[in-house]
Length: 179
Image 1: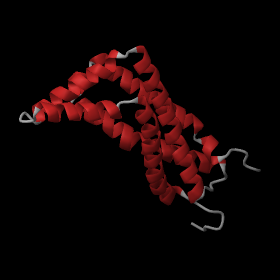
Image 2: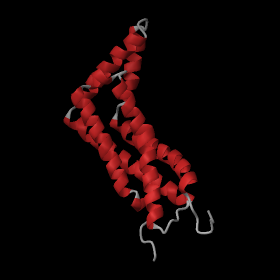
Image 3: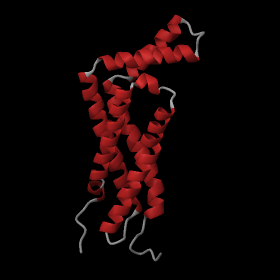
Image 4: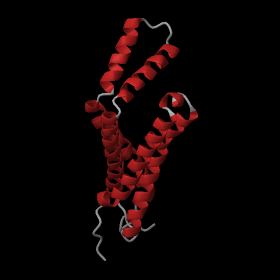
């Protein structure tokens, strides 16, 4: 039986699911109040989920699922394609949501800048006004959608590549492999 599913296409559903989960986490965080989450265990859990646990889990699921569909065979390069496609699709969904969210709620950016300023002052009470203004100016530049959108995609593609290397080393099985 010939396999008609490409490795990248097999990661589509998992990438969509991962992206939706990240969007739901953001919405829940926004409803709870992001300022309450700064430095809390909930914020740490969300970061661990989004940057470590969920990408690894979805890449592992994608590679093992493809392996089942492909008569128990999956190459290292196929694992890389699956993993990067999962994380890039998820990042696209999240970045597009972030863009739309900031268009609908433009006050969110100023709220985040205010939270950032108060955190800077808490951690560095001796900073001058000029230093604080420069830090806020840099933060504002990095919050620009022209930077956030491509950086989000590039960052998740990088994480996808790293985790795919690890997962690929674990699950790969080539046709000439005997074990």
